[in-house]
Length: 130
Image 1 (cartoon, rainbow, N blue to C red):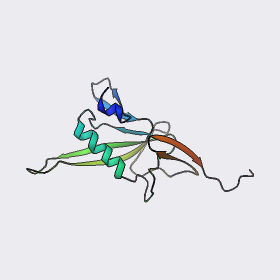
Image 2 (tube, rainbow, N blue to C red; image 1 turned 60 degrees about the vertical axis):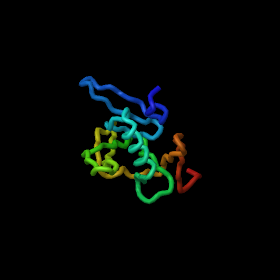
Image 3 (tube, rainbow, N blue to C red; image 1 turned 90 degrees about the vertical axis):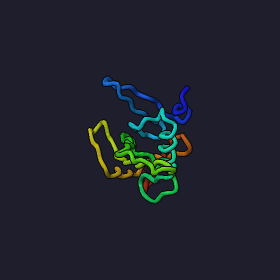
Image 4 (cartoon, rainbow, N blue to C red; image 1 turned 30 degrees about the vertical axis):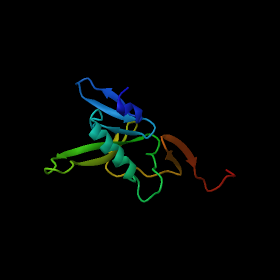
């Protein structure tokens, strides 16, 4: 078992020999090479410290039908004796609607919240009598 598998990531091979990684529980995909431990650590730290939808205390998952796509736009060489700085960008994909957005999709009245590696769906309604 690869180290990225223990973190919940699955590797997918494309017909052109490229690969990407997905985390089904978090609805995140990335083309960053997570077979490299330094990159797996960088993506993990990025997701741990990054509030994807604003100033929330929990990590809100992308709405149903959406995935977060984390990309590494540029590789910056580290100065001698310093750690490399990994800068990531994020965008959202909805495969059903064939949509790619740089802005986060709006959270609907039903939202999903990540609790550890488990997604829990919570419904928010204004009137329970309907």
